[in-house]
Image (cartoon, rainbow, N blue to C red; front, side, top):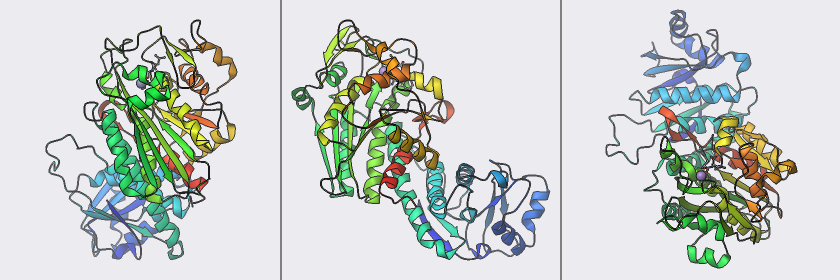
Length: 499
Ligand code: BES
Ligand code: MN
Ligand code: ZN
């Protein structure tokens, strides 16, 4: 979609749809009230009918308002004015855009940016408008033969600005919103593609394509032979059971000073996780095509970073493989040697994410990184603990953990921290090897992070378990593109560009 910032009189806008907010109980904010007066009180009259009182999630369409050049007015509920936060704002924008999906409007003028949420700024409001609009507009049609589906598509949205002095912040917010939204959509597309299309080789091709966006990006794909030479016995043990060769995607973006230490992102890229010999049950197994969403988010963040031309050094590492049962696959009890030299007893072949991540984390050491963040759909236990609303966060550094929590709150793409106390470490002791790849029934998210922590002692590190947040199940089954907003916010903040 195309976006534009404009200041002017809302009621004078010649548009297919003018979008206005209504607070609870039928309270019109100033901008909506102005439009109401311009059309002889038609809006208030309509509200009096009782069809809408401004509750969050409500909407009402008014056609051909009297004396105005717009074809429609779309009223969206914003909830109680005193509770009008960024979260409520984003929901109102999403509702407006999803409503437009069912109309023939090809463009719209949105007046919601006149309402600044109490925890927001002009910058964040314009950024959120674009991001929420794109999120709601997104649909995955790549695998449909008929993509037209009889629907018109919204092509352009004009964002109304109340105060001309805020124009710079507004435009900056809009542009940042577009870059983040593109990153989110990229991550969603990759996540939504099925395992037979989105293979490790496909992911690698997608990473190479990112080079078109910037000359400052280098992309290298490490093949199995190279990984063998590096001693990545843990990663390779997972791909042995697959016909698709594993890849290690290495993306290096030099936007900062040549010697500045980079931020390294490591994303789990399991393009299909059947569990291996420790085979998963059949019901719902198709959702394991989403097991590469961590890797997809790294590509998404890299894409946003390139579009934003961030003055930072960023490395993206995506170990990518399938996990399937096969005569050559890992067997329970096998002992493999990781790149770090540590030996691992594979007690459950379904705990494969950590096996591919540990070698990528060891590879990260060569960058002498400022920070390493890994992102992985790592444990079902995280879904049990936090559901879909929060990503699990574990870290060996409290400042870094706080930075991630803050970026999550800022974007609504939130994380929740779990403890990484030493007390848990003994749960992954192995009799036969240096470490076991599972820690028993309890605290599964924590013991998975404990496993990774054994490979991250040389740098500041945080782990995001996105098993619950990376995709929605059920009827709304689709990737969410999380945590691209959170991570991009963290980078923007480090560059002091987030406002
Ligand atoms: N990819 C799964 C984790 C997962 C499960 C994510 C369900 C989202 C929904 C991971 O590879 C896995 O299978 N983990 C096991 C670990 C266990 C064997 C210790 C799990 O969570 O059951
Ligand atoms: Mn698994
Ligand atoms: Zn997995």
